[in-house]
Image 1 (cartoon, rainbow, N blue to C red):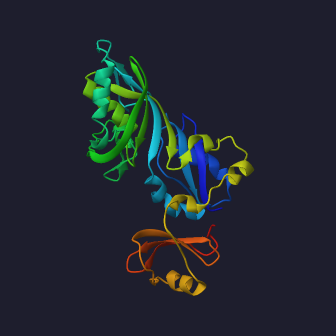
Image 2: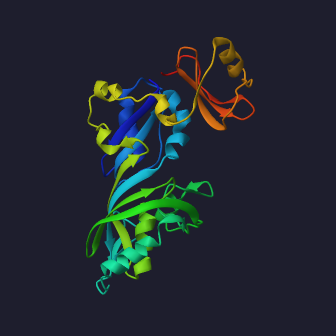
Image 3: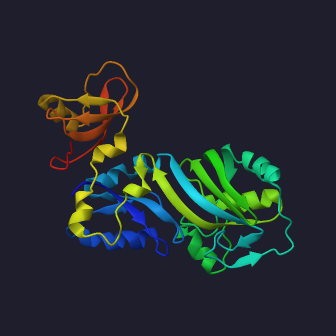
Length: 289
Protein backbone atom coordinates (compact mmCIF):
# COMPACT_ATOMS: atom_id res chain seq x y z
CA UNK A 1 0.00 0.00 0.00
CA UNK A 2 2.57 2.55 -1.16
CA UNK A 3 1.85 4.97 -3.98
CA UNK A 4 -0.35 7.83 -5.14
CA UNK A 5 -4.11 7.90 -5.32
CA UNK A 6 -5.63 10.45 -7.66
CA UNK A 7 -8.87 11.87 -6.27
CA UNK A 8 -11.46 14.06 -7.97
CA UNK A 9 -12.42 16.12 -4.92
CA UNK A 10 -16.03 17.32 -4.82
CA UNK A 11 -16.96 20.79 -3.67
CA UNK A 12 -18.16 21.54 -0.16
CA UNK A 13 -15.46 19.69 1.79
CA UNK A 14 -11.88 20.43 2.79
CA UNK A 15 -8.89 18.47 1.52
CA UNK A 16 -8.46 17.04 5.03
CA UNK A 17 -12.06 15.85 5.07
CA UNK A 18 -11.46 14.14 1.74
CA UNK A 19 -8.46 12.28 3.18
CA UNK A 20 -10.42 11.29 6.26
CA UNK A 21 -12.99 9.67 4.01
CA UNK A 22 -10.46 7.59 2.07
CA UNK A 23 -8.79 6.23 5.20
CA UNK A 24 -11.42 3.49 5.26
CA UNK A 25 -10.01 2.18 1.97
CA UNK A 26 -6.67 1.25 3.54
CA UNK A 27 -5.39 -0.74 6.52
CA UNK A 28 -5.37 1.03 9.88
CA UNK A 29 -2.31 3.19 10.64
CA UNK A 30 -1.54 3.60 6.93
CA UNK A 31 0.15 6.97 6.44
CA UNK A 32 -1.91 9.23 4.20
CA UNK A 33 -1.14 12.79 3.11
CA UNK A 34 -1.96 15.10 0.22
CA UNK A 35 0.06 17.30 -2.10
CA UNK A 36 -1.60 20.70 -2.17
CA UNK A 37 -4.71 21.96 -0.42
CA UNK A 38 -7.90 22.62 -2.36
CA UNK A 39 -10.38 25.09 -0.85
CA UNK A 40 -13.81 23.70 0.12
CA UNK A 41 -15.35 25.51 -2.87
CA UNK A 42 -12.85 23.94 -5.29
CA UNK A 43 -13.15 20.61 -7.07
CA UNK A 44 -10.68 18.53 -9.04
CA UNK A 45 -7.28 16.93 -8.68
CA UNK A 46 -6.16 16.05 -5.18
CA UNK A 47 -3.17 13.70 -5.18
CA UNK A 48 -3.14 11.57 -2.03
CA UNK A 49 0.13 10.04 -0.89
CA UNK A 50 -0.21 6.56 0.56
CA UNK A 51 2.38 4.89 2.81
CA UNK A 52 5.99 5.50 1.84
CA UNK A 53 4.85 7.86 -0.93
CA UNK A 54 4.21 10.53 1.72
CA UNK A 55 7.97 11.16 1.60
CA UNK A 56 7.61 12.25 -2.03
CA UNK A 57 4.88 14.84 -1.48
CA UNK A 58 7.22 17.77 -2.20
CA UNK A 59 7.95 16.41 -5.68
CA UNK A 60 4.26 16.35 -6.57
CA UNK A 61 3.69 19.79 -5.05
CA UNK A 62 6.46 21.22 -7.25
CA UNK A 63 4.70 20.09 -10.46
CA UNK A 64 2.89 22.67 -12.63
CA UNK A 65 -0.84 22.98 -12.10
CA UNK A 66 -3.85 23.86 -14.20
CA UNK A 67 -7.18 25.40 -13.16
CA UNK A 68 -10.49 26.31 -14.71
CA UNK A 69 -12.18 29.18 -12.92
CA UNK A 70 -15.13 31.49 -13.24
CA UNK A 71 -14.13 34.90 -11.90
CA UNK A 72 -16.83 37.34 -10.88
CA UNK A 73 -15.96 40.98 -11.46
CA UNK A 74 -17.73 43.85 -9.74
CA UNK A 75 -17.71 41.96 -6.45
CA UNK A 76 -15.42 41.32 -3.50
CA UNK A 77 -15.45 38.70 -0.77
CA UNK A 78 -13.96 38.28 2.69
CA UNK A 79 -12.40 35.01 1.49
CA UNK A 80 -11.88 36.15 -2.13
CA UNK A 81 -14.36 33.50 -3.27
CA UNK A 82 -18.08 32.77 -3.22
CA UNK A 83 -17.85 31.02 0.17
CA UNK A 84 -17.16 34.31 1.97
CA UNK A 85 -19.17 37.43 2.73
CA UNK A 86 -19.78 38.83 -0.74
CA UNK A 87 -20.27 42.50 -1.54
CA UNK A 88 -21.61 43.45 -4.97
CA UNK A 89 -20.65 46.82 -6.43
CA UNK A 90 -23.77 47.70 -8.42
CA UNK A 91 -22.12 50.90 -9.63
CA UNK A 92 -19.12 49.11 -11.19
CA UNK A 93 -18.60 49.90 -14.86
CA UNK A 94 -17.96 46.79 -17.00
CA UNK A 95 -14.47 46.90 -18.55
CA UNK A 96 -14.12 46.22 -22.25
CA UNK A 97 -12.59 43.01 -23.54
CA UNK A 98 -9.51 44.99 -24.53
CA UNK A 99 -9.17 46.34 -20.99
CA UNK A 100 -9.63 42.84 -19.58
CA UNK A 101 -6.96 41.36 -21.86
CA UNK A 102 -4.52 44.15 -21.02
CA UNK A 103 -5.03 43.63 -17.28
CA UNK A 104 -4.60 39.86 -17.58
CA UNK A 105 -1.33 40.32 -19.45
CA UNK A 106 0.09 41.99 -16.35
CA UNK A 107 -0.25 38.77 -14.38
CA UNK A 108 1.72 36.53 -16.76
CA UNK A 109 5.20 35.52 -15.67
CA UNK A 110 6.77 35.62 -12.22
CA UNK A 111 4.78 38.04 -10.09
CA UNK A 112 4.58 39.05 -6.45
CA UNK A 113 1.32 37.72 -5.02
CA UNK A 114 -0.22 38.36 -1.60
CA UNK A 115 -1.92 35.18 -0.31
CA UNK A 116 -5.52 35.41 0.93
CA UNK A 117 -6.05 36.07 4.64
CA UNK A 118 -8.26 32.96 4.67
CA UNK A 119 -5.56 30.43 3.82
CA UNK A 120 -3.74 27.49 5.40
CA UNK A 121 -0.47 29.41 5.69
CA UNK A 122 1.08 29.59 9.14
CA UNK A 123 1.25 32.92 11.00
CA UNK A 124 2.99 32.79 14.36
CA UNK A 125 2.33 29.08 14.68
CA UNK A 126 -1.37 29.33 13.77
CA UNK A 127 -3.26 28.95 10.50
CA UNK A 128 -4.06 32.26 8.85
CA UNK A 129 -7.71 31.30 8.35
CA UNK A 130 -8.09 30.63 12.08
CA UNK A 131 -6.93 34.16 12.86
CA UNK A 132 -9.07 35.68 10.11
CA UNK A 133 -12.24 33.94 11.33
CA UNK A 134 -11.67 35.44 14.79
CA UNK A 135 -11.26 38.89 13.31
CA UNK A 136 -7.58 39.05 14.22
CA UNK A 137 -5.03 40.78 12.02
CA UNK A 138 -3.40 38.49 9.46
CA UNK A 139 -0.02 39.77 8.33
CA UNK A 140 1.14 37.84 5.29
CA UNK A 141 3.98 38.80 2.98
CA UNK A 142 3.74 38.83 -0.79
CA UNK A 143 5.76 36.08 -2.45
CA UNK A 144 6.83 35.26 -5.98
CA UNK A 145 4.64 32.86 -7.96
CA UNK A 146 4.78 31.81 -11.58
CA UNK A 147 1.79 32.06 -13.92
CA UNK A 148 2.49 30.63 -17.36
CA UNK A 149 -0.79 31.35 -19.11
CA UNK A 150 -4.29 32.74 -18.57
CA UNK A 151 -6.70 31.92 -21.39
CA UNK A 152 -10.09 33.63 -21.50
CA UNK A 153 -12.76 31.19 -22.66
CA UNK A 154 -15.68 33.57 -22.24
CA UNK A 155 -16.34 37.07 -20.96
CA UNK A 156 -19.90 38.10 -20.23
CA UNK A 157 -20.10 40.71 -17.50
CA UNK A 158 -19.75 40.14 -14.62
CA UNK A 159 -18.24 36.69 -15.28
CA UNK A 160 -14.93 35.76 -16.86
CA UNK A 161 -14.25 32.07 -17.56
CA UNK A 162 -10.52 31.36 -17.64
CA UNK A 163 -8.03 28.49 -17.79
CA UNK A 164 -4.84 29.08 -15.83
CA UNK A 165 -1.46 27.34 -15.98
CA UNK A 166 0.70 28.13 -12.97
CA UNK A 167 3.36 26.94 -10.57
CA UNK A 168 3.51 25.96 -6.94
CA UNK A 169 1.97 28.29 -4.37
CA UNK A 170 -0.26 30.28 -6.73
CA UNK A 171 -3.61 31.29 -5.26
CA UNK A 172 -6.35 31.65 -7.86
CA UNK A 173 -8.40 33.58 -5.30
CA UNK A 174 -5.60 36.13 -5.05
CA UNK A 175 -5.41 36.33 -8.83
CA UNK A 176 -9.15 37.02 -9.08
CA UNK A 177 -8.93 39.64 -6.32
CA UNK A 178 -5.94 41.36 -7.93
CA UNK A 179 -7.39 41.24 -11.43
CA UNK A 180 -10.54 42.92 -10.18
CA UNK A 181 -8.45 45.55 -8.40
CA UNK A 182 -6.42 46.21 -11.55
CA UNK A 183 -9.66 46.80 -13.45
CA UNK A 184 -10.99 49.02 -10.68
CA UNK A 185 -14.13 46.92 -10.14
CA UNK A 186 -13.17 44.24 -7.62
CA UNK A 187 -13.02 40.52 -8.26
CA UNK A 188 -13.44 37.09 -6.64
CA UNK A 189 -13.58 33.41 -7.54
CA UNK A 190 -17.07 32.14 -8.30
CA UNK A 191 -16.08 28.56 -9.20
CA UNK A 192 -12.76 26.73 -9.28
CA UNK A 193 -11.60 23.36 -10.56
CA UNK A 194 -8.04 22.05 -10.56
CA UNK A 195 -7.78 20.26 -13.88
CA UNK A 196 -4.29 18.80 -13.54
CA UNK A 197 -1.19 18.52 -11.39
CA UNK A 198 1.75 17.60 -13.61
CA UNK A 199 0.66 14.48 -15.51
CA UNK A 200 -2.28 13.83 -13.17
CA UNK A 201 -5.62 14.84 -14.72
CA UNK A 202 -8.96 15.36 -12.97
CA UNK A 203 -10.81 13.04 -15.34
CA UNK A 204 -8.56 10.18 -14.20
CA UNK A 205 -9.36 10.73 -10.52
CA UNK A 206 -11.50 8.37 -8.47
CA UNK A 207 -14.66 9.51 -6.74
CA UNK A 208 -14.95 9.51 -2.95
CA UNK A 209 -17.97 7.27 -3.50
CA UNK A 210 -15.83 4.58 -5.15
CA UNK A 211 -15.74 1.05 -3.77
CA UNK A 212 -12.55 0.44 -1.74
CA UNK A 213 -11.27 -2.26 -4.10
CA UNK A 214 -11.80 0.03 -7.10
CA UNK A 215 -9.97 2.87 -5.39
CA UNK A 216 -7.04 0.69 -4.33
CA UNK A 217 -6.83 -0.67 -7.86
CA UNK A 218 -6.13 2.87 -9.05
CA UNK A 219 -3.06 3.29 -6.85
CA UNK A 220 -0.21 4.73 -8.91
CA UNK A 221 3.42 3.68 -8.32
CA UNK A 222 5.82 5.92 -6.43
CA UNK A 223 7.80 6.41 -9.63
CA UNK A 224 4.98 8.72 -10.76
CA UNK A 225 6.67 11.42 -8.65
CA UNK A 226 9.97 11.17 -10.52
CA UNK A 227 8.89 10.96 -14.15
CA UNK A 228 11.68 12.43 -16.25
CA UNK A 229 14.37 11.89 -13.62
CA UNK A 230 17.50 10.08 -14.81
CA UNK A 231 17.64 6.52 -13.55
CA UNK A 232 20.58 4.79 -11.95
CA UNK A 233 20.52 1.05 -11.30
CA UNK A 234 22.65 -0.39 -8.51
CA UNK A 235 24.11 -3.82 -7.97
CA UNK A 236 23.28 -5.59 -4.70
CA UNK A 237 26.69 -4.61 -3.27
CA UNK A 238 26.24 -0.97 -4.30
CA UNK A 239 22.75 -0.88 -2.80
CA UNK A 240 24.10 -2.09 0.53
CA UNK A 241 26.70 0.69 0.63
CA UNK A 242 24.16 3.25 -0.59
CA UNK A 243 21.75 2.32 2.20
CA UNK A 244 24.57 2.85 4.68
CA UNK A 245 24.89 6.44 3.49
CA UNK A 246 27.90 5.96 1.26
CA UNK A 247 28.33 7.63 -2.13
CA UNK A 248 28.42 5.40 -5.21
CA UNK A 249 30.81 6.18 -8.04
CA UNK A 250 28.90 7.60 -11.00
CA UNK A 251 30.22 9.59 -13.94
CA UNK A 252 28.26 12.48 -15.37
CA UNK A 253 25.04 14.23 -14.53
CA UNK A 254 23.88 16.65 -11.86
CA UNK A 255 20.70 17.10 -9.89
CA UNK A 256 18.56 14.23 -8.67
CA UNK A 257 18.08 10.70 -9.96
CA UNK A 258 15.68 7.83 -9.39
CA UNK A 259 17.68 4.95 -7.92
CA UNK A 260 16.75 1.37 -8.78
CA UNK A 261 17.90 -1.91 -7.28
CA UNK A 262 19.27 -4.76 -9.38
CA UNK A 263 15.71 -5.99 -10.03
CA UNK A 264 14.64 -2.59 -11.37
CA UNK A 265 12.58 -1.59 -8.32
CA UNK A 266 12.54 2.08 -7.25
CA UNK A 267 14.33 2.30 -3.90
CA UNK A 268 15.52 5.88 -3.47
CA UNK A 269 16.15 9.36 -4.78
CA UNK A 270 19.81 10.18 -5.01
CA UNK A 271 21.78 13.36 -5.62
CA UNK A 272 24.26 13.41 -8.48
CA UNK A 273 27.30 15.37 -7.31
CA UNK A 274 30.73 13.75 -7.22
CA UNK A 275 29.06 10.40 -7.49
CA UNK A 276 25.58 9.30 -6.41
CA UNK A 277 24.65 10.20 -2.84
CA UNK A 278 21.51 9.14 -0.96
CA UNK A 279 18.80 11.76 -0.44
CA UNK A 280 15.57 9.83 0.23
CA UNK A 281 15.93 6.10 0.78
CA UNK A 282 12.94 3.82 1.21
CA UNK A 283 12.84 0.90 3.60
CA UNK A 284 13.15 -2.54 2.09
CA UNK A 285 9.75 -3.87 1.19
CA UNK A 286 8.35 -0.49 0.14
CA UNK A 287 10.23 -0.47 -3.18
CA UNK A 288 8.04 -0.16 -6.22
CA UNK A 289 8.63 -0.98 -9.89
